[in-house]
Image (cartoon, one colour):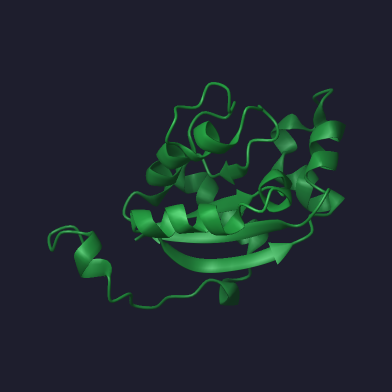
Length: 153
């Protein structure tokens, strides 16, 4: 099973949407393999957003990510990266389709509720950035046979 990283951003935490967003992922059939609340420091933000560190908006982005803790999730499922990306919708909430997380809860490009890994390769890197190995759990879900077909597992 593929794993991916999701961060519930301060915009999610401040608006008290954590439970709603977790519920969406679980109802879809994704398994929570890791979950923790954490305050992001400058070092982890510079690493996570290294591709944006030279942009003029980076200080504002970094500050917005430190307003409150984030919730880090390790989610698991078949094609988890793509499933989560489809569920989250376009980065800019104004362009995100209704029914997606951002389409339902965001009208902003920056205050867009969630971060989701964009590829399996980046998911592996990001999971290591936010979780120690012992914080990601392998366990059997009794619901798996009701989520996936027998030939998919």
